[in-house]
Length: 424
Image 1: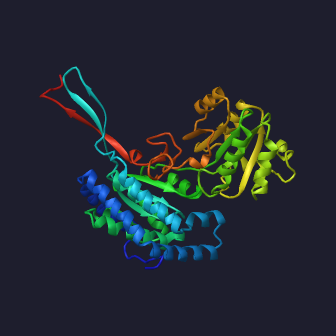
Image 2: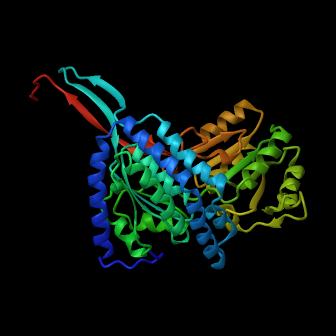
Image 3: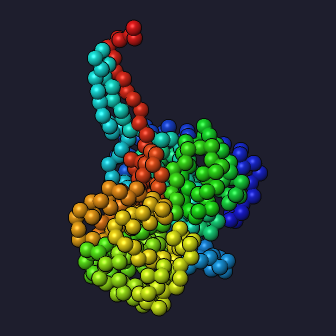
């Protein structure tokens, strides 16, 4: 099968067919016990380990094609797999299997004066469509999280990772089916035809939620065209503010890690704010420059080191996903909060400070999905939060926010138990 497999049916007919199969499989999945779902996912994790050579070979094909097509270094980093990353993918699936099943969890209960007993109970959302780019690990993470929470999933990965996605999906399904999960509960869309994405976005009544994971253009298209509810992951324009009371050694370590550990992840710092009274500003800036990071700064940041380039107005709203960082010097906490309010994408923002009152103000006043004190923004990750894996980091304000894992993939229903009551 090639990356552009020709299909005889229309995109709309294809999506309807696989969505109906997914919905039927979800009904079977909903009847499976916690133990059955966990065992199936453990088998899927083991299948990923067994198929590592084939998956890495498929990934090498994708990387070679991407390099020939001039894919950026950051995108290549997201795409590339190696034995350590494969171990991480399999381990993440096994970790999801070990997490408590949220389905059936009682959120709260109440009894009305007329004797009706009410409870709210977590249930699966249904059939979830995942549209994603570059990252082949999403194939495994998304399938594991959806299945563990009782949802079926339609996976539509990007063409740059097509062979990797197919190899990972095949391994996952082999393990799942061996333990009673219908193959249709985790389907990979069998074509890279872009029209299928449009068909998924308008499949209201067939697909219950769409989760986009990718660049700004993908997310913008999904939000503009979708007739299905969307759980959006927008840009990761993440800030770190070095307050005047920050410990210099701590600040230097956090800043370097937040930017350079992996530049292509959504939790990478993209803007550094330095308090005008922070005592080690020159050292922090020098560390980054010496490590090969390009800095673009305002006038006061450029005065710290002649290697800092002038920032344009667009730099403060840019997710570089590369070894590039915008830097501004600010006059205290209020100025930092104002800058973040104007330019943050509400993903992850952090402060480094030894002042507890300042830290509390930052935590309370920054309106982002994740707000950190004295820690690298690269911890913005479902696995690091103890969630096993994540579908994405939701930056909106409805349904779920921050790393979306099992609980974020459920909704609830009301259960009402009566003893013959009728309404007057």
